[in-house]
Length: 127
Image (cartoon, helix red, strand yellow):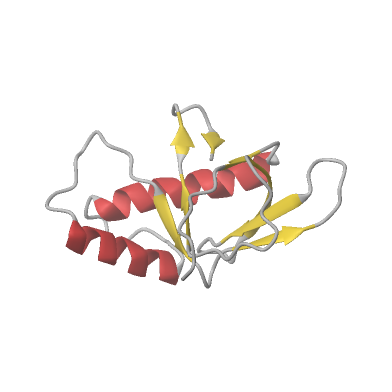
């Protein structure tokens, strides 16, 4: 039996372009959950939104929901760089972006089941 464990990581120093892409995908996720089916989202992200909507009784207008990323669309690469050792690929409707992350503990040997992108304090920081 595999252990279930939540690993937290923070996206650090994203470029302006990458931050803009993440903001757009995250904002479109929120709009989609509130009923705007015309927004552009990664197809697997739309599927995750539809699954979430089936589980929720109602979507709260003032609540921001974490963007849920399917395991087959999310990956973490290990690369020794000056900035960080870990880089995560976040899928977007235009393909995806690699962002530098710093996890709270090592990720080697762990299998990702799903990822959630959260916007912390509404200030452009993603975790």
